[in-house]
Image (cartoon, rainbow, N blue to C red):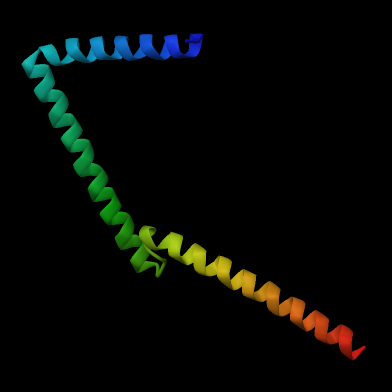
Length: 94
C-alpha cells in the first residue's frame, strides 16, 4: 500500500470521526439536515427559473443541449461529406 492509499484511508477516518462528532448533538444534526433541505429546495427553484428563462429566450432547455450537440455534430459531418463530394465533382469536370 502506498502513501496515496494511506492518506486516503486517514482522510476517510478523520472525516468519519468529524461527522460522528457533528451528528452527536441532535439539535446540530437537525439544523444541518434543515440547511441541506433548504439548499436542495433552492437548487430546484434555481433550476426551474433557469428553464423558464431559457424557454423565454427560445433556447434549448438544459436537458436538450446534449441532443442538440449531437445533431450539430451530425450536421457538421454531413457538411464535410458534401464538401468532399463537391470537390471531387469539380476535380472530375476540370
